[in-house]
Image (cartoon, rainbow, N blue to C red; front, side, top):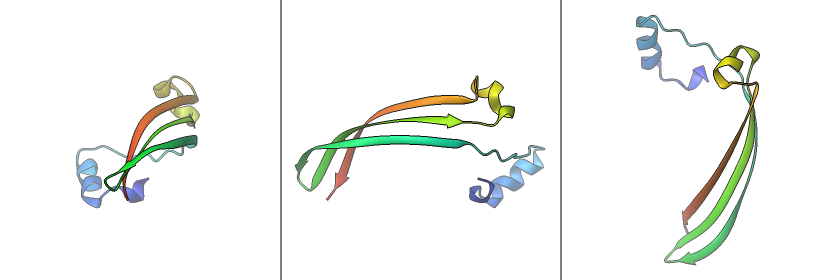
Length: 80
């Protein structure tokens, strides 16, 4: 995660006295998209995904528990 943060932002955070502590979280996710229509070089579909996120014990107080669930429903539009 730290490698993806721009160096300028890291310098600003360090100047403000803030430190970044990298945490490893584990994510299990599955999803599906059902393609429903195709017109004018656009393909549309409806989808859903669900997942579980496991966080370190030190972050349990921030998340409320060690494992948190997530669910999403979405519309997918793709240019063909």
